[in-house]
Image (cartoon, rainbow, N blue to C red; front, side, top):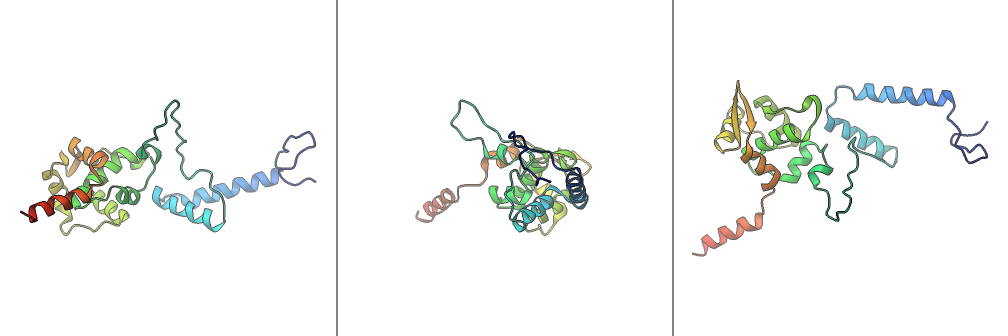
Length: 195
């Protein structure tokens, strides 16, 4: 009997024996069963651990296809390439400096980044608490007022029943305004101090 992946002499790869294929399908079913109920970030951590532990070369770490823009030398925007980024990754990339900015980031994440059942157009206090914790961002002292404060800051519109929708100002803050250039803020402060 030939080993798996052996050629048949004419250069054609032979099919895997049925027993091996059945074992592979059983292994896949066991993995899917073990991952059932975990969120995307948790699944990614498990996948990364297993790939590293087994010293495998991961061909794809995301279900998103590679994007190539023909006739263009400009890179594809980071937000498109990392469509499946975790809330922690997005927080580290955007570096929000306040609970108001982090609330806007959570709403942006849920409305623009995640897909499927987790995606939602509005957020509430429960969403903030869940995603602040997942992102490793310090919880505000008064969580119930966090969204109303972010609304007053101009990032949200009230949608009723404790729900808030990210508005254009909040969207632009996350998509285009963060991270802020800290060097420019420091220069402005120095200028005032030298007067």
